[in-house]
Image 1: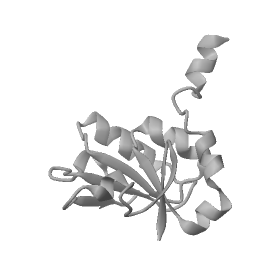
Image 2 (image 1 turned 90 degrees about the vertical axis):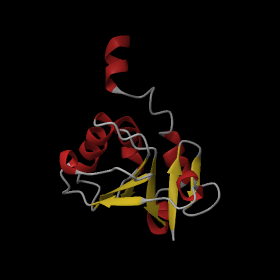
Image 3 (image 1 turned 180 degrees about the vertical axis):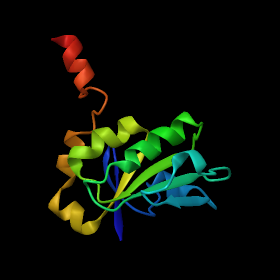
Image 4 (image 1 turned 30 degrees about the horizontal axis):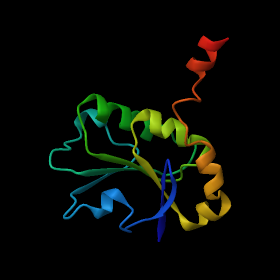
Length: 131
């Protein structure tokens, strides 16, 4: 089982509250972190899941940004070893939500993720403009 992290908190993957899973007949495209986003054919995909093999592998953020710039408007989900400290970056990169394991959710409870849910307000550019 896995947990979906949204701006509102935790949702069980596949539950009715999981917006992407609630769509009937969702075409899912899963991309490993070494995918070339310029070569990805996302036509027909309602959900693109980008895998993060470790929290130190940030290539998934680049993949998300590139897919959005190329016009992907479907649901974009980061999956794997994303930590709470990276949630704001995931959202700013274009991800709609993050899928984590139950084990990671136990180590980093919902409060830690919700603390970062106001991802638009906590970027360094805003802090530089305010100073």
